[in-house]
Length: 262
Image 1: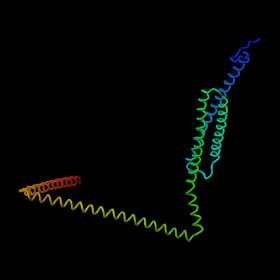
Image 2 (image 1 turned 180 degrees about the vertical axis):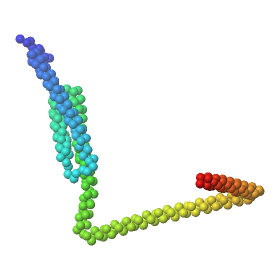
Image 3 (image 1 turned 90 degrees about the vertical axis):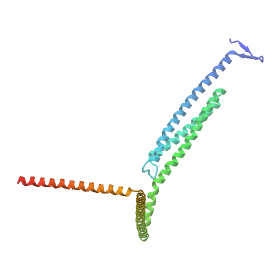
Image 4 (image 1 turned 135 degrees about the vertical axis):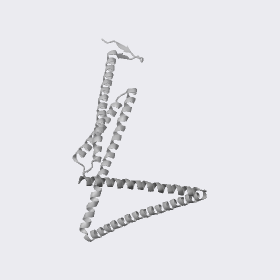
């Protein structure tokens, strides 16, 4: 026998039924928390997996010779990213339903923030996938643009020999014009250098005239400069005579030495 408890309104409530209700509530809260933690862990694992797949997928845009069509590895990587994003969307839906079944306001507010973060990150990754797909397509278009143009030009030339010959003559004319322009540029630079040398000669001549004019205005300066010049000439003559004498003496000694051998 379990005694009954009287409520405020006069109704009798069995203590055993009240304990059973509290136990079911605690059990439901515990199972809900465990399910939420497991689903969140799966969502985080899939987010990390998405980042790894994005790193692999972005490398296809930097291939030196990117093929015209997507390779098998590229298609598989893109398919894995799509599957991962779908799995994450399913997990977010399960987390949302699990959150709606809870009654605790504090826990629900915290989990609501976590759920919003998972949703925002999923939308960001969807935009990143679209951006990478466009980047790879642009790289593929750039890599195949020039070969396509060249093949079209070759096909046009093969079908129109006269046009090909005319294009060849135009190209030759362009090269000749470029050579003429280069020669004109070199000649213009030479004329400019020659003009610069002429201006420098005029400047030096003007400086010499000024120095000569200044020297003529100073009394005795011309005679001093003349004596200095004469002394330099005399010293040069003496030094030249001495060097000539030494050379002659060396030659005589060398001749005597050679004649003494014989």
